[in-house]
Image (cartoon, rainbow, N blue to C red; front, top):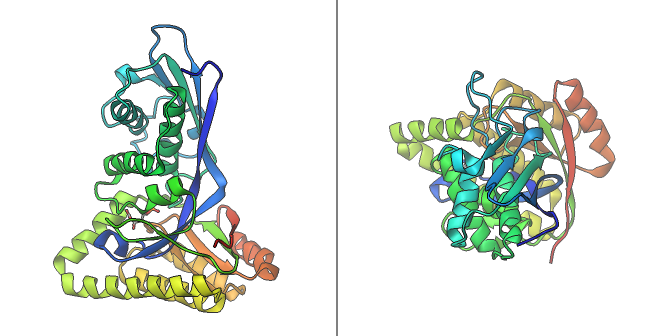
Length: 333
Ligand code: PMV
């Protein structure tokens, strides 16, 4: 077991194409956002003290590291012992699942969790916190997990948060590379022919993945043929986007993003604030824009040429975006 503190981390992510339809088996594309990260430090604690989780600086933004908001009268404890934490508390669930997976007894350790990933905004905060925690705990125990094992464990935690996650969040934050994802299938490497720049802009309205996914499921249950057709169209866009990314055709990519946004409006997961930021980004010169993630709040992403990036960022802030993050999706082989 480690005697010096060990640190592990995982990045944020955005979904470029295919959110919601991916839950129903259609393809989706997501990329890591490495400017923001969840970090967990594991340090030795006094004998017989057990495992303590400290999550103090996650509270600044919203009360919970997962994207399931808690009632205001039930704030998340800043520091708690694994032994007394509730079964469904996501940080302790991640620790318990990791210990069970490694057949390891509870160590005397302190796990300190921090994250710069905006919470409840579709940037994979919950998945990244889980991934960093699982890695830090395994490293503390002197064990190494394969990415597939970490991803599977994170997926189990995501199920506690959301019920029916597709698996895209855990995949992209654990593998930390662009992915073309189809539920239940081995991940496919996505080669990026030419780097491209995205601006992520936050409406500041919390996005609950669980609520949005349930909203779509209810609608799909009422008129399955109509929603299946929308999912098919979204899936086709993800296929076309893959070709655009693999050939470096950013003009086509931008147009596909805007088409995907129009279909997300039809799925009824957009909002006036998201639509406004999408329109503002495009008017300011973005090649395309769409909401990203579960929707009903959270972020939009805009594809921009570098020389217009500042202009688009300023326009988004002016239009009410709480913050903007610029990220480059780098070329890969
Ligand atoms: O966690 P978010 O907000 O990035 O959304 C996840 C994307 C969904 O397709 C809506 C749900 C899922 O599990 O894939």
